[in-house]
Image (cartoon, rainbow, N blue to C red; front, top):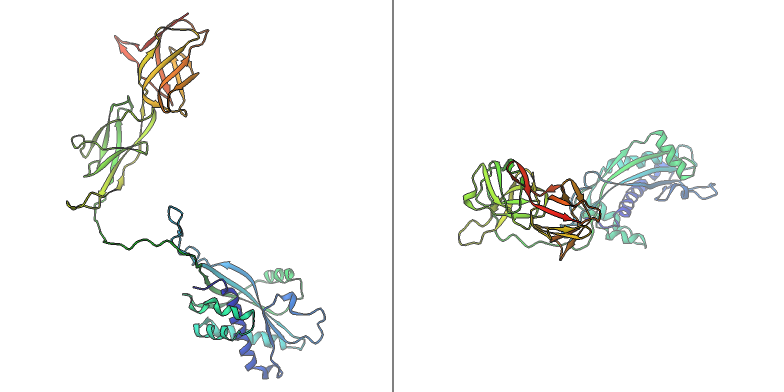
Length: 410
C-alpha cells in the first residue's frame, strides 16, 4: 500500500512521462522543448503574457473515493472498539491537461502529443513509477520517492474522462482565468494505508467443524396468558426439544427446564419470583455444545432461537396492613415480586384508584405504601393492585369475587 505521499507521487510520475516524451519530439515543436507544469491554471501565466513559453499543464482538480474499494477492510474495529484492521483510503484522481502557447497551432500539437503519451501509458508499470520517482532529486520533490506507490496492490490506470461543455465552462469559471485547450483524465486507484498498529487475535489452536440440521424452534402459544408469580408457564409449538436448551424470559432471564418437562411440542417451566410484574416475552433458545467429548468440559453457545411470544405476569398480594385502615392513613401492601421505581403502580379499592404510593426499602422492593385520602368513603372494598397494566387476581367464591378485601374506617 501507499503512503499519504501517493497523490503527489502520481502527479510527479505523470509529469515525468510527459516531460520525457515531449523532449523526444521537440523537433516537431519548432526545436524547443515545452515546459510541463503541475500548477493551478490561474498561476501558469504571469500577469504579462508577452513571450510566454510553450507549456503543457497537468492540474489535479478533483479527488474522489473509489467505489470499488471504499468498503474493503471493514469493520475496522471489534465490539470493544479495538482496531483490528486498517482499511485503505482508496482514491480516484481527476486531472485536466491544458496547453499554452502563443504560436499558432503549437498548443494543439502539444495537447495531441500529451494525449498520445497518456493513451499509450494506459497502465503505469511499477518499474516506470520507480524510475520517474527516482529522477526527483531536489527538495521538496525528492520526498515523493518514499510514497511506496510502486508497491501498492492495484496498478495505476489512466483513462480519458468526457466532460460536457457546461462542466468545462464551470471549471474554467472557477479558475478565474482564460480558457485553454483542455482534456480531462481519470486516474485510478490510489490506495493509502495507515501505519497504525492493529489488534491481532491469537492463532487458531484447533479447528472444529460441526454439521447440524436446520431445526428452528417455533412457539405457537403459551398457557396461561395471565400468570401469577411462581406459576408454571406452558410453551406450545414444534421443534422445541434439543439436547441443550434454555427458556429466555424478557430477553435476559434464562431458565433451564427439567428433562421431564420437555418434549418436541411442549415445554413447561416454573417462573422465578425475581421477575418483575408486567408484559413479558418468552423465547426458546437451543444451545450447541462445542466440546462434545466426555473428557472435555461443555462449551455451550447459542444456536437457534424461536420466535418471541408475550404473556402477562400478574402482581400477587401477599399481605395487607393494617386492616381496617382509617382515612388519611397509610395502607401497606407486601407483594411477591419486586417493584422498581420505573414501574407504574395503582391501588384499586373497588372501582376507585389510588396512585399516591411509596416504595419502602432497598429497590427493587416488595413493600408498597399507599396514602388513603381523607375524604375516602368508608366501607369494605375489594383490593386490586395494577402494575404496568397487569392486575392482581381476585378470588372468586360462590359466583362472585370475595377476596382480598380491606375496610376503610372513618
